[in-house]
Structure formats: structure tokens, C-alpha cells
Length: 433
Image 1 (tube, rainbow, N blue to C red):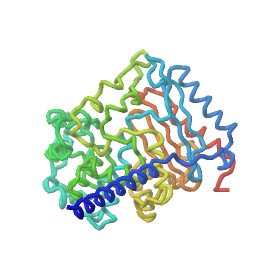
Image 2: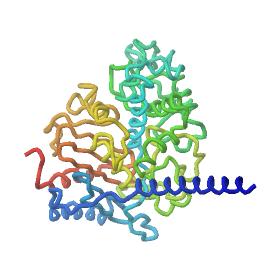
Image 3: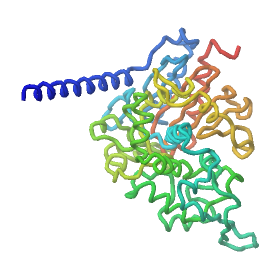
Image 4: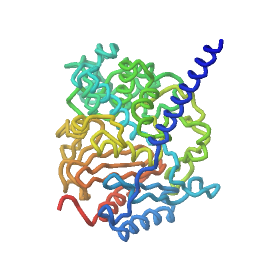
């Protein structure tokens, strides 16, 4: 009995040690991002003050209710400020750790999840998606009638199978339902990017999607739509885990992204941002309250890889800095540098923006300056979300820029472009020179 008691005691001690080690590891992973004075990383504090004045001006003029901005250079946070209110009705200031709906910024994280499986040799990018999701075997494409005055469309089979790379580059011909077969999509309840209120799994949603007619033949057009939601289901099929669990295990937990979720934990509702939108009169109005929305009260069932995540500016900056570092952050490696290089190369040529900008695996890619009158650097990659969030990474300038607000519809606001101008004008020591 005595030996048994000693053995049990040692077992409990060993278990406690494991728990302590895991807890310490978690704390290390979630440690604050390193900080630097602007001048120490080649930025001008005086010029960054211009950025702050512009943000505050838009808040004061009621163009946005609240904003969080975060800039990193050389792997350190050089500027992180908030403006306006989290809850204008209560007068609550916008905290730096406010949680935002990041919508299509989810695509970059889901793409990264896909590429971790690619690195494990689970598939090749030019594999047919039907090899992993058999329902894609008999997909058809809607072709509008060409007869004068005729309405409707015919359907034709695929010229070739849809590949995983087609989905990653949005060249699979899959929209959000606004193509020739729009009425078909509406009738099936498969329409629009926001799946947070759906009371079915993403797998069941994709199976409904595949029964509909797609918008274009694979590889022939750049069509923005459910491509990354299909990829999220691919992750589930290949990994045997829910997309939520796989992203948490493989990306967000290792990177210390503790405030990144598909659905909001009850304990964090006090930091969740309401959504405002521009009304017909041009004034902002409340569209969705922080505590009354599907991300908080919904079924919590449909993990949408295309537009489903919530995050803070800090959490998203961690993810972007990992990519800028070539797939590693704080000693944790998510991807190989060569995989990140592949993801941020242009894969589509003239199919995206008429060739004025490229598109990689989940990102828009700057291929040349001068096409849009905006500052930047060839090789930078970017995207944004429907709630008027945006980001970009500039590998040459070693820069990460994150802009968070909640504005839908956004109307004719031009704050994204102003933000980009104000960030680049703050650089006084350029690595290109």
C-alpha cells in the first residue's frame, strides 16, 4: 500500500509538472509583442502624429466610431493607438485589445492552415479538390443565354477539374451567389459571405453549394466567393478535425493569438465592437450591437474559413509578423520560408485587376508601383475585410500595418487609402535606398 501511495504521489507530481510547463509555455507564447521607439526602427514620431491626427479627424467628423491602428517594423511595435469609442452609447473608449469581426481577413489564416497540410505532404496544390471532397466530381457551370432578349442560362460540365490552387487563387469560378444562377443560390439559402448564423456545419453548407451551378470555368476568371470556405472544409476532411480546432492547435495557440475565435466567448463580450454603417442620409447608424449578433448568440456551428473569425489588432499583427519572418514567430515555426514565398507570389497574372496587381495564395500582391497612385513596395501583400478592416505586409520595408474598425456599409469613405499614405510617409529610413 505504501509503495502504491508513493507511486500515486509521484504520478500526481509529474502531472502537475506537465501542467505547469504547459501553462508557462502558454504565457510565453502570449507575451506582449516587443516594442520600439519609432526613431529606433526608422520611423518619425512627428510624422506618425500626422497619422493620429487623420484618424482622430475621421472620428470627430463621425465618419467612423472607433479605430485601432498597429504598426510593426523590424519585428517591434512602433505605433499602437486607439481612437474614438468602443461603445458610443455608453461613452466607453476604444481599447487597444478590442475584438473585431475580421471577415475576409480570415482567408489568410485558413490559407495558412491549408499550407501547413501541404507541407505535411497531404496533397499537392494542383490536385483536384474532388479527390478530397468527392461531391466536386460532377460540378456544372452556368452559361448565360446569348440569344437577343433571352433570359436564363444553360449549364455545361467543367472543362477540367477544379484544383486546390484554383481555390487558393479564387480562379475556381465560385462566387458568393451573384452570378448567372443567382436565383438558384437564393432558393437554396446559399448566398453571401456571412455564415455566422447558419445552423449547419461548413461541410453541409459546401455540399449544398456544390449542387449549384458555378459562375466560370476553372482557371479562366478571377471570381471572389466561397473558395476559402471550401478550403476550410478541405482542412476538416484531411485533418479529421474541425476547422476551429485545427486553426487553434496549429496557428492561433502556438502564436499566442488568445483573442482570435470563430465565435465570441461570453467573458469577452465587453471588448467586442458594435458595427456601424453609413445610412441613406450619409450618417452613421448602429447596424449590429456587441451582445446581439450571431457571433455571440448564434448556433456556433458553421466555422467559415472565408469570413468567420474575430480578432484583435495585436493578434492579427502576430500572425502577419510570423509571415514576414518567413513562417516563424518567437521560436515557433508555422511554415517554411519557401512556402511563404510561394503564397505571396503572383499566381494569376492578368486575371486579377487586369494585371495591375497580382494575387497569390490568399493575398493581393503588389507587383509594381504607379498603377493606383499609392505608395508601397513591389512584393508587399495585403487584403481586408467587409467590416472595413485592412492590413498589409511589406517585406522590403520590414513593415506590418493593421487597421481595425467596424463599418458596414462603409459608403464612400477613403480612410484605407489615407491610412496607407500616412504609414508610408512616416518612414524616414527606407530599406530600398
